[in-house]
Image (cartoon, rainbow, N blue to C red; front, side):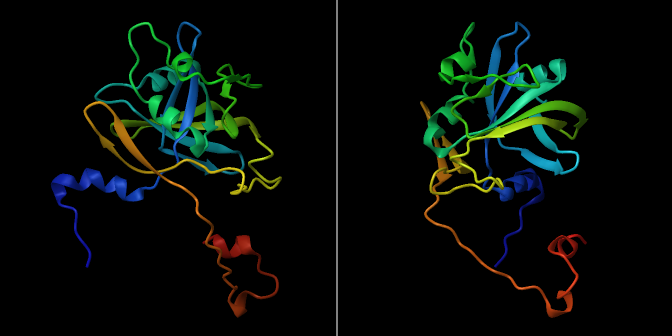
Length: 216
């Protein structure tokens, strides 16, 4: 039986898109120091040219990362592993006055090649991005960015960029609970893989590529 979401709660329908795959976004502060924060609303939006979209909160307050990106036009998307899920969550916590979130995290910097913000050495892949356009979609601003450089850990990914699940467990976030003195976050831990082979229809045999079939 299906359950309808009532009109007054329709805004919660976006959570039906869980699980998400959070990333760590690094940017440059106005004083030149480094900033890091985790976000989940990130997706590829173009293959050629390579572009991605990152949605950041603009209301009721503008997120610090959004301010940095709007000012500099640059950021780095870092792909974390499940091994440091606790640090991933901690990067979302507020800082004390004068405290730097990147320094507090203890992450090591990885010098970028095409942008000013550094990558995070402990992460398994890094996408250096330059802002292409932005759209205010509501309480979030959608940032469309060109991927100007990328690198990955050869032990975590194959040469064709497939994840090696025996070497790298990506952080896949399901839900969280806010407690008085802490937060509980639930991540999926790979316990294996479900593999399925789907044959082409006979009418497609001979001359029709997989890409043609997928493109409607």
